[in-house]
Image (cartoon, rainbow, N blue to C red; front, side):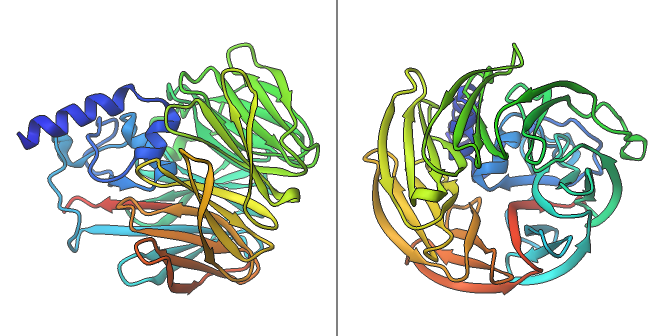
Length: 382
């Protein structure tokens, strides 16, 4: 019965949209092997990165149908990766001991990261040096630097055929073919397929369930662009408020949330009609967002209010506020759904909130101006 239940859960998740997969990601994933047996296994990932595993992007130990490794043990690494934008580095944190195990230098002004489709690497976008630093997840070392123009934010399309980036200083989105090299040492760069002008300072984005459309925030032209990825063009400009930043879809992809920094709130849209549904006050400097693993709660960082708000997705009401010091920035929920990790942009630290109690349990020192965050559980073959 347990095997049958897991199979049914996998079948359901295989059909859901990119947003739903991201919202519900957590726990043990069925993974399609796309790399060698020597690659690390991403057992599970936080909701933002969990999507790629749900889509069969990560490898697994020995190609087994079900991962053989337990969720805990000496060969399982529960890691947090933090970009330190002003420190030109990333901090690697052991989530069991809450200690920094490594700090690695990368390129100039790193912001966001993504796990490669084969599960072997973490790509770190260095905006000012126009490069991506490639971190080997097995050795936790930087093994390659690949050129990519102004990679502020980067993510794969739902069909895993495109790598899409937002170029903040250039005011556009760039669409690339996915990794075309078989060995990272041969990586020369991604093939650019299109450049799509959007607005001033495009930064965060989300895809529609079918991957046809992309929603991009343009912070300093105060717009949200709706892009047709097939036609490589902007088809609609929305006005969510002054300085829109992060973007998040509700489960099912029919409701879109936009954090509006300059007005201390979240704007909600119907993605079929693009009608504005709600304006949800959260706090001064509403900035980053993260969905809970069950898709019922949206967490919003209020950078200038030093708080994080929890929004009930169904009612679109704030149900709880957490105190987080010194500029809470980007945030992510752990794969098991128990903790919320929040970077403090002005405090050189990352904060851990226990969601069962709402209390801040840990504060861990990082590098200067910590920003992006990726949470993954890895098992290294013995």
